[in-house]
Length: 166
Image 1 (tube, rainbow, N blue to C red):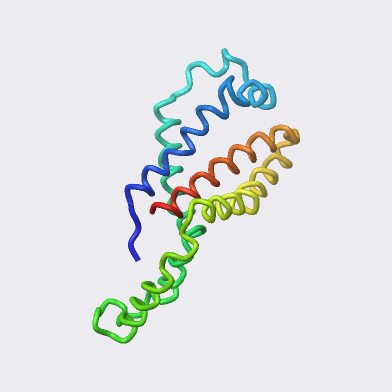
Image 2: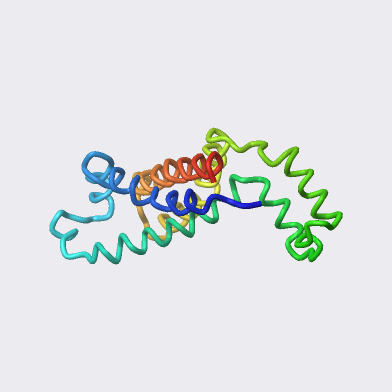
C-alpha cells in the first residue's frame, strides 16, 4: 500500500495553522494566557523560529502516526511486514494481497471516517495526556479544556484529510 506522502507532509502543517487561530486573540489566546500566567510582555523574546520549526517537526510525526489510526488498510500490511514472499509480485501472498486490496482497499477512506477516528484519537490519547499533566501541574479545568479542544479540532482535521487523500 502506498500513501500520498505530499498529503501527509502538508497535513503536518495543521497543528501550526490551527494553533495560529486557537491561541490568538481571535480564539482562546486571552483565556489561555490567563490560565498559564502569561502576559503580552512575557510572550516577547521567545525564539519563534525554533518554536515553529519544532512544532512543524512534531506535526509531521503526528501526521505519520495518525495515518495508522485512520487508514485501516495499513494494518493488513503491518501483519505481513516480515513475510518475504510479499516482495515477490508473483507469490501467492502478493496475489492474494492484491486481490484483497482491489476489493477492499478503498473501504472507509473518507473525510468523515478520518474525522471520526482523529476525534477518537484526540479524546482517548491527547486528552488523557493533557489531563494527567494538568492534574500534576495543578492546572485548571479551563486550561485542560482549551488544550483538549485544540487537539480535538487539530487531530480531527488531520485524520479527515489523511483518510480521504493520502
